[in-house]
Amino acid sequence: MHRGKGMKFVGDSRISTDRKPNIPKDYSEYPGKTEAFWPNFLLKEWIVGAVFLVGFLCLTAAHPSPLERIADPTDTAYVPLPDWYFLFLYQLLKYTYASGPYNIVGAMIVPGLAFGALFLAPFLDRGPERKPTKRPLAVGFMLLAIAAVFYLTWESAAHHDWEASKKQGAIVEGADIDKDSEGYKYFEANTCISCHGAELTGGPAAPSLVDTGLTPEEVAEIAVKGKGTMPAGVFKGTDEELKVLAEFVSNVKTE
Image (cartoon, rainbow, N blue to C red; front, side, top):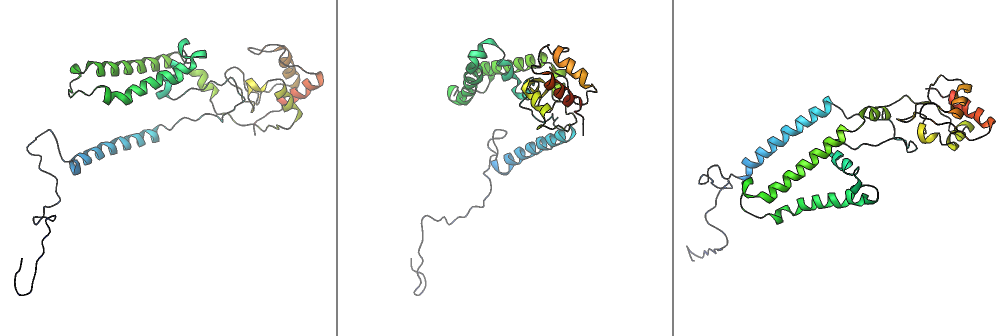
């Protein structure tokens, strides 16, 4: 269009002449059914998340995670125990159909089916109903899964020897051990290390050999005749080797 002398105005149909402020839409027509994502919904989610985060931080500060002694791969008597949220899988692997030759069933197939069903849940149940009574399959499978997790966790916790676990993971004072000495080599050669550990700190099936207070003669007698759960005849070697081993064990003391 022409306006004035020598002036031309060019319009673009893609640009609206009525500029609207950047504010959320009006949801007053749907009271209690929906709300603006920003800032209403997002602010509520942030507040709830912040409350849980602060509570979690307070819990970790008041009850720090318990630590155990340094891992010893030579201690075959150590029985590892997973954290509480994996106890149900730990219990599952104790059953005949999910352990031994069927270990793949308990370790891969059963958890795979469970998590696969959880992943496919939105596709398997696509009904619009929100009432649990009108979605029997989805609610039934979810209740079954929750009941199974709770039962297996309870079974694992109720039948576990917590005193032995506390003992086997207890942090003990370290000892000055010469692992290049002849006595330590005989200690390894006679499989003593499998029960007493590389650091001689013992475990559930064997006592600690640190600061025993025993004389070399007493150590030699136990090595040959056995004591408690230790059977006789464990030591297999010459009298000279037995003497070196007994003196080594008798002299293991804390730093």
